[in-house]
Length: 118
Image (cartoon, rainbow, N blue to C red; front, side, top):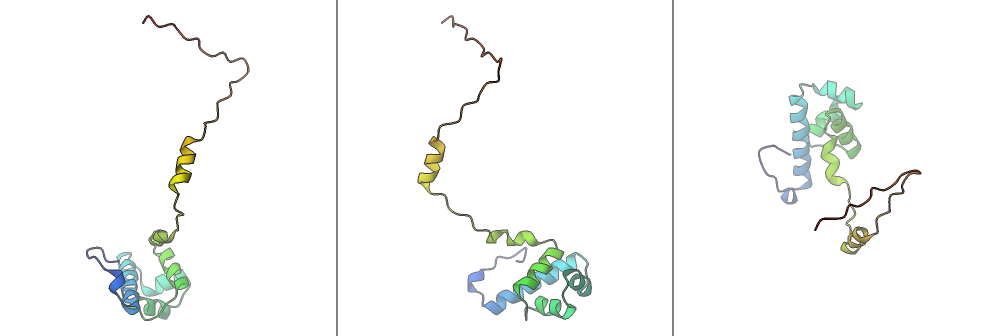
């Protein structure tokens, strides 16, 4: 979650991941020039709960979501949206479906074709 370094999340322990998340929350809060009290009040959590989250010592998903919402960082959760894979067979069927014809309005006459000089 840091801007200038790659983290191999799979190699980190749960505790190390919590610390990285806390570090991220603290840095974004500071960049937005918010105090812990301001952020905690806006997220409707206690300042001590936010402090624990920032230190990676405690927290839960609900608290994290509240904090991300106040920091305007909910887009970070977009990676959790599950997209069902489309099978190649279904895709092929959709491409070969006949297209519905456009119905003409009453009184409409189609343009006549000109004969080619060819």
